[in-house]
Length: 102
Image (tube, rainbow, N blue to C red; front, side, top):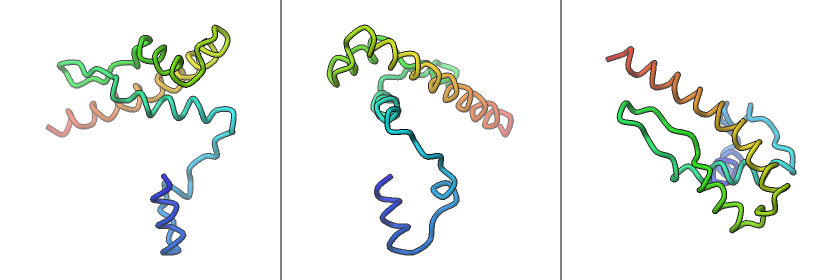
């Protein structure tokens, strides 16, 4: 993201997705960070469907970054699940569009 922000500042041209991105409230930054850090932990089904973030991977991330206490982990996990549901819906729709083109 910093690359695109720097490029926009340097060129004076802001790409539409960057211009229309929502502001992230500070208290949600760990959720966003964890979500993208954990993308490599996902499994892909034989049909190409993206699978949910594994609980065990989230648990390891939480331990590593100080979210392992029960309340902190529950808070993080519930928000990650909501974000993940939206992401999985987006990926399912994308896969559906791709398979209809074939």
